[in-house]
Image (cartoon, rainbow over all chains, first blue to last red; front, side):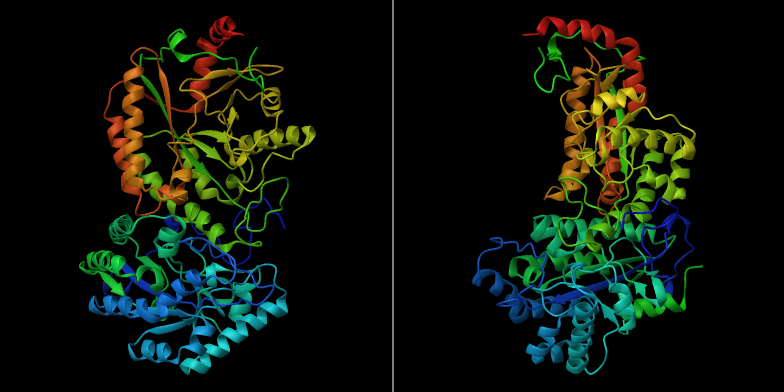
Length: 300
Length: 302
């Protein structure tokens, strides 16, 4: 369906709302910036099912024929090594982690589920595996099954239903926000179009992440060097902190332990996050805490 | 003989009669924010796929660009305002209909409006002659209706075109086309009727190709300053054009905006800069240099 030329968006998922026209979003204790660090744990499948779709751009050596040992194991590094380095770094700085976990990680790595829960992380749903994403080619039944299997696995592994959803590779069909809401999801991280949470249809809330601060987007897809990435993170925060004085900002960052958890990278991440946490007026919170605050204290 | 596609007569810049800008300025500087809308569910028409990453929709890429209209545009505007820049927007005209706050902000500032097509997901490549004629009618009517302004030029939608594009633009009354990256000065484009010129745009000083890969905004600032220094030097002899092309979803990102400020602070601190628009450059050039340039180029024909 091509766009209809009329006022507002060319879809029904949310309203048009330029930030310049909005009321003031007040964070707790008048914080200027809410910091939400999402740590994504996704399992790379040895053999993804036939007909599944992935937009993974791979990084490193690029996509290679089966069996692709380096790519598969590069991702697995995050589950074995990188995650602990990343969580330690966040903990040292007093940053709460929100872990986006896929069903295969939840089912296949009970140690990691318990570890994340013991450390007080919020766990949100992240599809089925890192090798399959939701796409517009799925039928409604396939997509509903996909979402249900992810939700069921998370509930079984963690003991409670996840409130947030972050699609693998930001994958959605036209129906996804609607199906997620029906499946009980409260907030959605796929839409990267804002620096504040905003309402979506039927009570769903968008928790927009900064795509440019996604480590995979920056360093694997765009090939920005880690030192420059860390500088961008600091520059990004500085402006949000400045703008956040007039109207609260959300800095949501999506990190992948297989990438940013590499030994040579982690120090740069720590330095950038320390810069952020060294400021008064930064509220480090989980996705649910941010969304609950937003819902209870709408911009006025 | 010009070389195919026979639109431009060869004319080496060192042999041309000098260009003098209105007040003897060395560099005509125009800032071109690309204010765009990409459709959530476009229809693929022709050879280019608007969202090649995934089946439609591509929520990541769609919302990344939508960020420009919700947030980035407004941050960019603050910096342009600080430097009193009168921009020449490269505009997907449907933005005027979808997002009236953006329309009003541009009209209030008396920007010039260059067409960048209707949507950035509707390319010209596969248009028939009649479809393309209708496209220009739509462009002209939409701009007039929404802003009261007369359309004078175009950067093709996502820089797309057909072999007929210059002829049909001129037939519709447009006077400049900015898809040509071939010169540091305006140049006549051969068309069947009327007069059409190219006004130098930039695919180099352009945040879109740069930030698609591993360049960052400190590098963008450095190359803009270098470009300016060189053109400023050469512009003492014969006026030059410098364009900086921006996209609010990229330059309006918090980690990039201070570098735009740095670029404009540097350039605008110089005397001899004509901060202008592509509309004004094209009109001035046609009025003062078009005929001379056509005559002058005759001697270089093979």
